Length: 334
Length: 281
Image: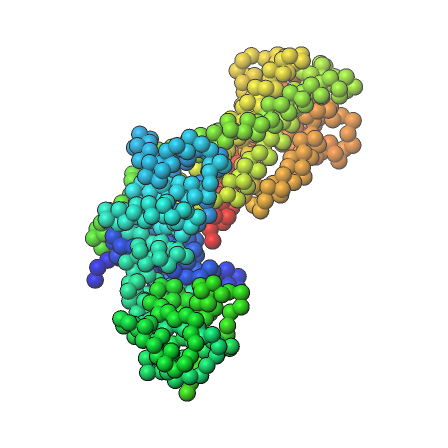
């Protein structure tokens, strides 16, 4: 079996009455990106804190770069770079001074640290701001400086807690390409994110975490398959049972119908011309239809389905911009 | 197994290399603290402005009403003013550490392969540098208002050394408080509840002969009194406490050193324990 660069087995951690981790398992082979997804409070940050030697697990064990995080934290620290969620830089120093301090406290030679700091300041487009004290930095600038700090020593393992939160789209893409470049050099990355497209774009494997354990794990494609394919959604002008009868031959499972009977949803096999056929069938049945769409599964669906944070219905309707009054969907079995 | 992983950095540097690394970490942390001070120089108010104000205030306002046997009030009070300022300014350690611990930068330090105690040692060195500035300010102000040491350079230096060693030990005591305190306010309250009483319930600013016996007992064994008396003895300044029979006042230099060492022996391990506890979750 190939040795993993990052491995956690059965991690548990309790804070008072809150079970933050309830037997968490994670693994990432060298040179891969492991995305950790989960709602707020799922245990992502606690797991990250344990893996980066900031917290001790109640039970379970974890290895980073082959070293046990509890028994040999010093060796782990030599091999990791961390960009935590909250700003962990010195507000009173300049951007450049912060990077130099991180480099020097990581036993880099001052001259090497200088060269590396300038390189990273350029990479993250902070050269102009490098001489300014952090107090004047925007949220996005701090974020980028934090990322730069995590990469000062070119560590073989990087932990990035929501690396692009608060970044504008251009900076986000830039950070993505930096991360991809590092992985190309063999760096192993664990990143948590709220952006599912970020995990989709970057991660080789994704672990979905909820209530302190991994509830699904796989490549983005594997996870998308979990949702069971595409979904038909139709909005009628008025509730009409004829619509269900007309559509039944086209769908592959039970309908969900909103309380007012105007919103229909059902799993379908996505085929070319499906939407057109749906419209024709409804038209032939004399049903007045306002909107028809086939939704391809996204990681959002996986996320919503797997985690208990947000009911799938609510999220879907909110995504349609109809959050003001979300129709209650009821299962229809006939 | 570990060898199979690419890019992994092995540890196991030799002891001298690790010690050199630790010293460098202390230097880097200290330099960072000094940059903080340079950015906000008013942080130094308690070791520059306050000593001047206190010296002038006590020498001219109180001094005119307090007779000192065997000399002037200025020559009597200077050692006491030095101790008053050094003691109260050690509160800065508590506040500085609390501020550090409540910002994310400590989390960053803890993920770096640095010597963890460098944060504490760097802080205490910063404070000793501030205490040295405080001492210089007071010495210069003292000379301007009529204080004169009557001994040789060696003894004068020894007096300052005893005072600074005590200040160093107090910075570790204050460090423990800063590590224990949840917020800056708690750290400041410590200053008012502990540092001010031990500064004032002492022989620092007034001759203690007129005090009731029970109070004089406390005053004679107060470390601030011992260090003050040690400085007076080493500088050849009036030291009325020398007439007290308490062992501490008969041997103020030894008492001062013993207090400083005792505080360090207790507070050094306590501070590292509190730091570990504070930074483990």
